[in-house]
Amino acid sequence: MNKGTFGRATQKNEVAEIYQPPRRRSILFDARRHGRKRMVIPGKLAFGSVRQVLDCLIGDMTVGGARVRIKPGTQVPNELFLVHLKEWCAYEARVIWRRADGNLGLAFKRSFDLDGAISADLRTLREFCVAYDDAK
Image (cartoon, rainbow, N blue to C red; front, side, top):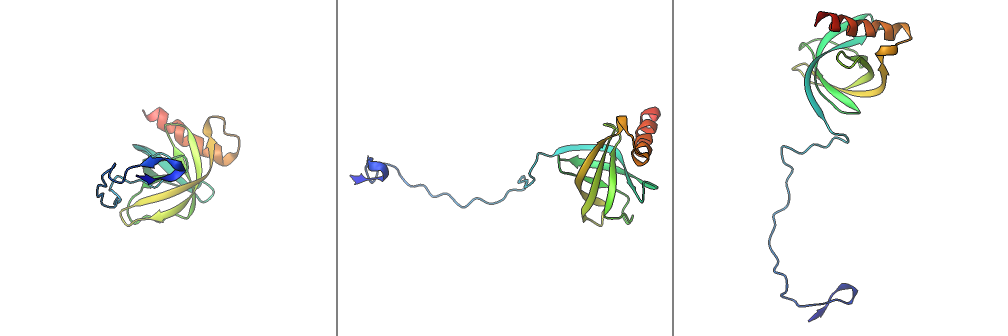
């Protein structure tokens, strides 16, 4: 008998050691801090004092950011607003990655409820949501 840790007596051959290969990252591994909500819904990207607007598709969202798709080759600045048309929310965001296929990764700085928008820029963003609801 061996005296194990904390004074417990154990026998040497009590537990058979089984070889386990090292764990590999799987395709399903997701390093995000927050859970991702997958979706495919229309949105708007607004920039340049909310004077320029692009249609986009929101592919997935987390508390801290989103993946959106725009027409490939379209130029957008690093700082912009993402308007979630169904939830009447706007997110002040910055582009953290870009891909040639039109996908953009956004990191959110702040969010705004457009239902009670006060500033002129937010009221302009609110109008996109109103037009979306009227078109349905």
